[in-house]
Amino acid sequence: MSIIEKALAKQQQKNNETSVEVEQKTPQEETSNNTVDLSSKDILALDKASLAERGYLIDNGTRKSIKDEFRQIKRKLLNNAFGNASKTLHHSNLIMVSSAKPNEGKTFVAINLALSIALEQDKTVLLIDADVLRPSVVRELGVEEKPGIIEYLLGKSEKVSDIIYNTDIDKLKLIPAGKPHHLSNELLASEKMATLANELANRYPDRIVIFDCPPLIGVTETLVLASLMGQALIVVEESKSSIADIQAATRYLNEDLALGLVLNKAIRSHKDLYGYYGYGYGT
Ligand SMILES: Nc1ncnc2c1ncn2[C@@H]1O[C@H](COP(=O)(O)OP(=O)(O)OP(=O)(O)O)[C@@H](O)[C@H]1O
Ligand SMILES: [Mg+2]
Image 1 (cartoon, rainbow, N blue to C red):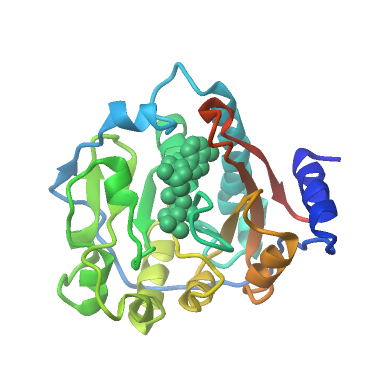
Image 2 (cartoon, rainbow, N blue to C red; image 1 turned 60 degrees about the vertical axis):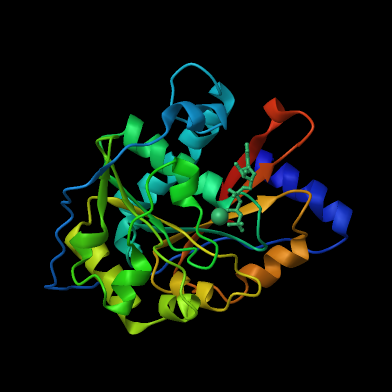
């Protein structure tokens, strides 16, 4: 029994519920002639010392267990994105990070995943703050606020390249959320967002694009976003979401999606025990 199966079994026992189904994929091909220029003049400097202090995978010394856990997660995601499975996935390099409920660790996982791939693999990663109602990627990274996805979807920033920023980590690019707008979530479900996803997937199929998304329960637009992705990582904080929550959150996800669960165990009183129980892919 894998670690994630054990953790889920434990949770299942607690909730006296039935099991969760995770994942799958089917074929689909897509072509586009649209082009996106990913270059940008601004270079955003990350607050590395603070990131390392808060458990982000920025340095080489500490947090070995989290590092190893993220290695396992990213190996599977990269396999899905570029290995044999990629042929059966639509937009295999677009990965959403979400959760059933708020505050389960989506942003923590999305940033760590992006850092882990950018720092250790020969892959460029584009991290997108798509949680436009509660954006926090810019704050967490300690970089300057910039126009982002909202301005682009509103038509205020014309070109995608205007909202893609280089960072002082060579292989890490960032699209911030931008200024919150009263139609923020509706914009996420717009045609323009779908076009943007197509462009990113087709123009740069060799890059990983990670979307830090809103939660699935209570934000219907997250499902629309999911329909644009090839892969989804659902973060589950053990003490927060029940099996029933996870089922409710994943029930209506696009069937073509490669779906994985990350169990994020946050023991607030023992900071160093924070950690991931595992990653589940497939059933
Ligand atoms: N495994 C972990 N180790 C250390 N800190 C963690 C871990 N998981 C989450 N945190 C911390 O818990 C807090 C909540 O996490 P995070 O902001 O990533 O959740 P979220 O799901 O993105 O929340 P929201 O729904 O508000 O966007 C943050 O301060 C984050 O740094
Ligand atoms: Mg968040």
